Structures are given as structure tokens and as C-alpha cells.
Length: 307
Figure 1: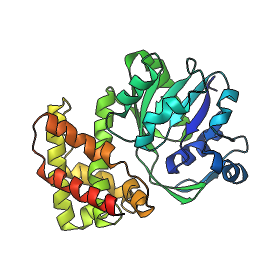
Figure 2: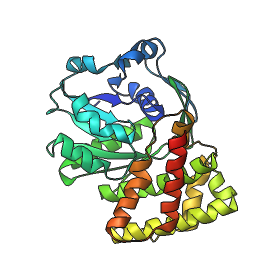
Figure 3: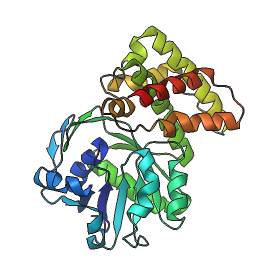
């Protein structure tokens, strides 16, 4: 049993699922907005689909005002939207973080560096990236599909924490691998986010449209080539990521609705700027022309602005 309690920030589909699984393994808290505390306290989170499980009755629902009452040592799991990561240090300002650790599970390119700068290099941070289907079917229920897969990475000085996180995720049922480089881990995940989230959102369809629609599949392949060129210039070689490997990786999640499309359908802010937006900034910095991805970004932003 870890000497650190687990506090999950972000009660979205991923945060809910993680809270349910963690609550059966260690002392767990789910940090929610004040207006949601009553709902979550009366109807504890549950997961369905690939795994059917209710949260342990010991799961504690808290708000920002309860932070001072947390144990002395806490692992904070950040499962918020990418655009909320920058607010985490201020959000936790009521607490002394010197004895705490962080696991950043939000998707987005460059988020680890952002958080490390904001928190300070002395705070241990693990980069965690999940690859499994999950969606909300009710405010407190997340439906899972496919296998629970995760990739984690950390700085050299956080190797011990990295190994603890590996053991913890494996205990929860995740097939977990360690990536030697944090940036590679973010690049590997964001490749899928850029292509799937943008094209499937424009098509207003589930992930399967990527390989079922011939025109969309061709565009996805063109985007993959552009992304690999930029990543290679940035020092990361994804030559082993062929078109077949890429499309096969999406197949298990073909029926899923990506987070960008879900956000637009619910008239919420998307994370587009942290996926394709940040990618295009890197491409422009290197002077690399990415006509297909740039055109897709413009179309995606138009849809977002009109939603």
C-alpha cells in the first residue's frame, strides 16, 4: 500500500474511471467543483462496458476548500482538459505542495514542460498517457471500451516515482509501458489526437470513419506523413509508424466518439489548440510546409467557432 493518498483532479470520463479503480486500491479522493459535490457524494462514480464496477464507499468527494484536510502526502492525478492544466498551481494554492507528487494525464503537446515550469522542478511529475475508449453516459458514470493501456515517462530524478506509478497502474488493470523520453511519449499520443480528433470531428462521426471513408483515409495518411516529417525534424523518429500500423491502432476504438467532437456537440471548449495548434507552431518554427494539416485546422476551428 502506497504511503501517498491519491487525489484525482478532473471528474470527466477519464477522471471518473480512474477514481473508481483507484478507490479499491488505496485512499482516494475525487476533486470536483463545489456545485457538483452533492451529486457525486450521493451518486458515487461507476464504470461500465469493458469493466463494470462501482467506486468503493471509501471514495471521498472533495472540493478546493477541502484541500487543507488532505493527508500530508498526496499523489495528484491531473485528468483535466489541456487548457485547464495551466490553472492547477493556482487552484492548489491553498495547499503546501512540497510533500506532494503529480501525475499529468491530460492530453496535449508540451503540457509536461508547462506544468513543470509552473510547479517548479523540485516537484516530482510523471507523464501518463492513456489509450482506451471512455465516454460519459451520465454525470457520474463512464463507459469503457477496449483494453486499458497506458504509457508513462519521467525525468531521471523521478525514476523511483515512475516505478511506483507503473506498479499502481498495473494493479488497477492497465497494460503499462515506460517511455524513456517524455517528449516522445507526448508526440506518440498526439499523433493520434491530431488526426482522429480533427478528421472525425469534421465528419461528425465516430473514429471508424477514418478507415471506412476512402477520402478521409487518404487525408489521414497525408496528415500522418506531414506529422512524421515535423516530428523527425524535432528529433523524434517515427519511421516505424506505418499507415497500416496507425489505422490498425484505431480499429479497437472505431465506435468511440473523440473528445473534440464530444465537446463540440456539448457546446464546450475544445483542446484543438493543444493538439493540432501546437503541432503547427512547431512546423512553422522549422519552416516545414504542412498544407493538409493546416487546411484541416482551419476547417476545424471554423466548426468550433460556429458551434
